[in-house]
Length: 140
Image (cartoon, rainbow, N blue to C red; front, side):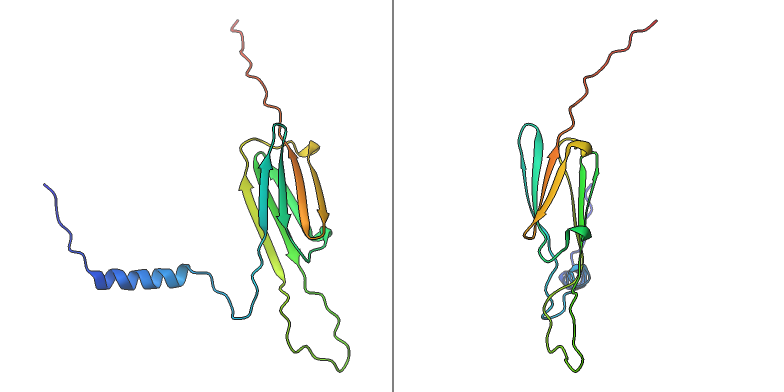
């Protein structure tokens, strides 16, 4: 036997409203978003990742690899010199921390991988680990 449940549209509409309000990211008006856009491609021996991270020094970029998991983080700093008697009227440059992580289809060989940063683009050449063949144990 199937039981029926009464559907109340007013309660569900309020639930949706509040859930959407609290789940939405908050953004201040006029504030720019920190984002890292990625392109990932693959060939037989490696993955190639291009990440847009403009306005960052290479010393402030960190790449962590654990198996097939890759994490890229960077700290964007808004360093400016304000002279005595000068005041900033408006600053639209953003600062803070940005990060992305993703999982690749195969483990990465950290020792053979390379990273380059040029003109705001981080390029990672992530060499694939050679899959070890299965070994059968002989029973004595």
